[in-house]
Amino acid sequence: MKRRDFIKQSVVGALALAALDKNGRAFGNESRPSRYSATPDGVPQAKPFVLRGVNLGGWLVLEKWMVPSVYRGCEASDEYGLSLALGSKAESRLNQHREKFITAEDFKWIKNRGLNAIRLPVGYWTLEGPKPYVTAEDFLDFAFEQASQNGLKVLLDLHGAPGSQNGWDHSGRSGGIGWDKNPDNIRETVRVLAGFAQKFGSHPALFGIELLNEPSTQIPIQTLKEFYIEAYSQIRKHAGEQVAVVFHDSFRAMDWKNFMKAPDFSNVIMDTHLYQLFTKDDARRTAQEQIAFALNRKFTLEEMQAEELPTLVGEWSLGLPESSAKNLSLFQGDLLHGAFADAQLLSFENSRGWFFWSYKTESDSEWNFRHCVQRGWLPEQFPA
Image (cartoon, rainbow, N blue to C red; front, side, top):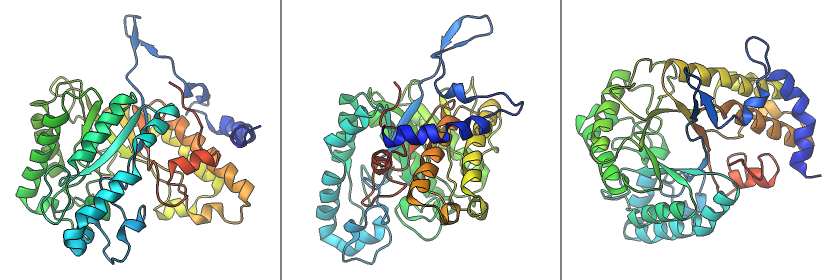
């Protein structure tokens, strides 16, 4: 018996007890929904395409914790600082990393696991990088080519914007949040998004374009709304309604009611990122409470989709606070991670889909999808 089969049998009873809706009805069988749903007149209607995929993080947008070897001999904390410190050597080092970190074999591996999509983080510098950034257009073209060959859809995600939308390293430059302080930054972001739409809008592998990853809660929500609407308008000039326009909720999940809805807008999806690691509440939960909390996120996603827009989970992982796994044996830790994975997958299944963060890192951890599969925490195969 494989490790994961044993783990699943060990936790299935606990999951069944926990997986009840607010009226006490089981929802465990919803993990593999019918391909069809009934319309008001009773005619079956095909359900929307459900994304099951991985983020290709640390590839075209660097994060030091994911790929520390790229930063060897340099004290920089972000891609801007690294590129600045390396100067004329930056292009060689970054392109060497890009060639080796994600290859054609990786796209085949993703396909062979039954996954159907990738979320591809890019920076505003990817196509026409201002100094000191190093462009990556050839690698972006390679990603679309490989996705197409392997039957994978691409969610092109603008991870870094001029001025930084959150002050974190994955925006390209850590420190202050300057994106909304200068109108030129917002105009440039819209222009960059239109450029992506013009280049890839008719590409068969393109599922959608995500307007901005994790904008800070410090940015006024009205500023974000105006930006999202303008970006949508510019993208639609180059990409038809078959291309989804995706926006992140800025960690304000229920603040988007009556926003960008039909008939004025079409094929708009909201992205939310669901982690259970970073807050004081996360640290206070026991292992069992973490699993129950993950299961209950089904109701949050249902509420968001009922009151706002179709929603996907653009980032999640198996990362948990050390306190939640305190005093657990290696075997118990495997049980916890397997159950945590199952609970999240069950909650996400009736959303528009999900993308694990991330496909790989240089170290083995709860953030490395390949490692999680190898450990038996995640399935070796996902349903078509």
